[in-house]
Length: 142
Image 1 (tube, rainbow, N blue to C red):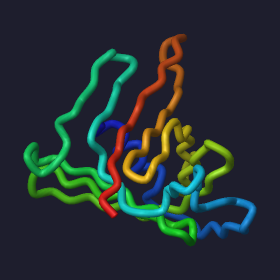
Image 2 (cartoon, helix red, strand yellow):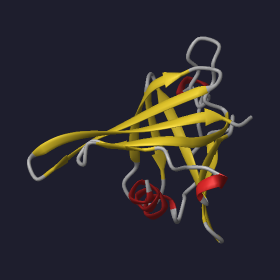
Image 3 (cartoon, rainbow, N blue to C red):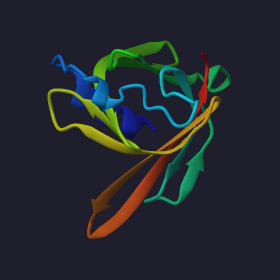
Image 4 (cartoon, rainbow, N blue to C red):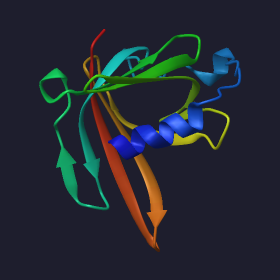
């Protein structure tokens, strides 16, 4: 998870303004559920290592929340003990593809599940000739 946040942090450090038209569906709606809101990470699957990590939340001293706003902007905040890192970003959603925009290369994830209470994102990448798909499981805070 720390690696995913580091990638997100580096890609979003200097965010440029990105406007969304109505066609961009910044809300990422799936049926009546919407991406708009505050989401807390509750689990991560690292496909390369083949392991799940569920040690998120105040009880572990490691909290990661992301807010998606209706205007296509958002912020991610990672609290690791007493250290807090915050990243502002913009995003677009087309179909089931979520793209987080920053100064560097955009981060592209697939929305695998979106309900009123749960969000599952996946990111596929290649490493040393193999393809991996990591998962991020979130619960709606508000």
